[in-house]
Image 1: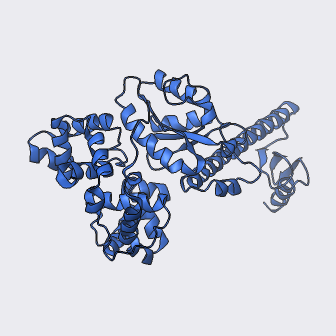
Image 2: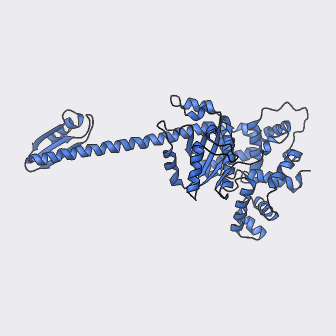
Image 3: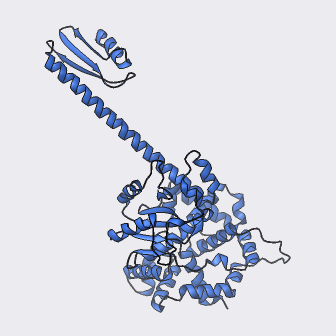
Length: 429
């Protein structure tokens, strides 16, 4: 096979396009496939010299194989492009979630998404079957890999969520006025697909994307049981913004001070874990759930808290919310720092709790209190109050719609529920 190996090397390397030779008593006809360079070679062998019709058939077969290879290469390249485009879109979204629009611009130099020039955005959170997310994102994708003035991201943490950042000038004002652009297209999808639901945040500047996303998760919890399966966010002001500023910042910074001695990775994971389940955090940052648990155990030991306890997580989440939205407090002249009880005993906190819980019936409030007392365990709550687990979850779904808070998917509304129940149970005056 020595002579044939030399011939194949010449054909593959681009030295010639076709050749024929005898190898012992076998006639071999070879044709290179594709452009010069390392390339495959079609080899046809027989006991006699082929007639012209057979040679033409071999050549035609080679042409078809070349076309198939080009089609496969194009498809492979397209798949790679789509994969990189998804990664870049998620990187832009992550930078915006961190409150860094300029970082997002630097990451996309040469192809800055138009969304980054918007003054305000709304986050539309679409719930749909996981298999539908890619076709929807592709349907609106432009040649640059974005979505016109908007940005659509497949959530890695929740497999049924499609995150749509919509420039506010393409949307309605949340009060029922006619929607346009991407917002109208997403609404049509929900109207035409009974398994879809859509939660819409209020308008926010780019640096407040995280707050807009949080609002959209709460709105989606309402949308799941709304008649049209679409709900704009209509919640009240967050508790962190109503507490007396200086005492609240003093408490939160004292509360969180032990975290300063921990690696930044641990504090970042702890912060993420206040907004979503550990399994979702693990998928989001591509770490194992055991690794996430280890970081949380380290943070809990530093804080002196059991972060498996829903009340501890609620306190930590409030402290993080306070420090992420405020400047350093002025130096305190008093030696005693306020406690969380001191903050929750204020009149604004009491009014906030009463307003939040007002839509609930006594039956639903009893179920929610039992659920919190059972550390958000529906089975244990059902045992304590003598109803079925399914009834507990039905009450929780109803409460989600009434409170405008997500209690079961990401759990971001549980913290507010913990504080509101604590205040109305008699802590506040």
